[in-house]
Image 1 (tube, rainbow, N blue to C red):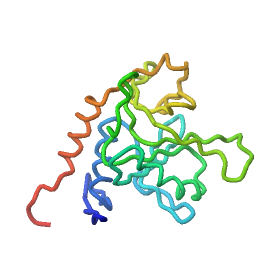
Image 2 (image 1 turned 90 degrees about the vertical axis):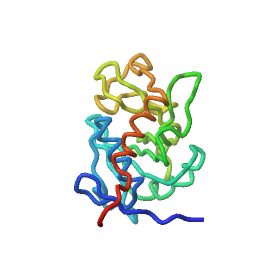
Image 3 (image 1 turned 135 degrees about the vertical axis):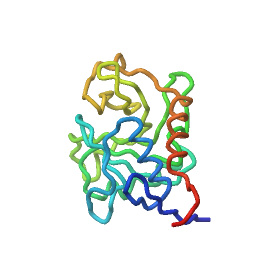
Image 4 (image 1 turned 60 degrees about the vertical axis):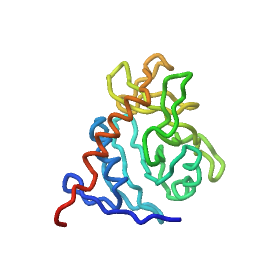
Length: 188
């Protein structure tokens, strides 16, 4: 069963869905500089580009309820001509917590392997984990299995600069974003 999207306005921008508007409010609260539908790629318009100094990050929002469901959405991004990293997120930034590490999976992240020579190679998809960077104090993400750079400032010292951000903390920011973008009633 598919659900119709509810176009939602947030801070003067009309988003195609309430979920996209909620992600915009969430990223704003976290200090993640983003642009909504900023580029046309080959057969595809990404939902957001987060314009971090270290590297731009494509962010695609899908109505997925689990981390496992995100993987079915990689093909369009891979075929689009996008040459940077990409993150696919679902209905919440807290799809799965990883209790042994304290990190929370925010979505499915690919850091591009720019050294791959095979056609179609270079997309290294895996869990994107939320952290606070000890160098710049920003909230950021990193790939569970690839480079552990801070997207906000580019700092890298292995996992020494990555401080876990737990599911409870992220849920608090998400609930605030949900409250900000929910339907308030009244005339349209």
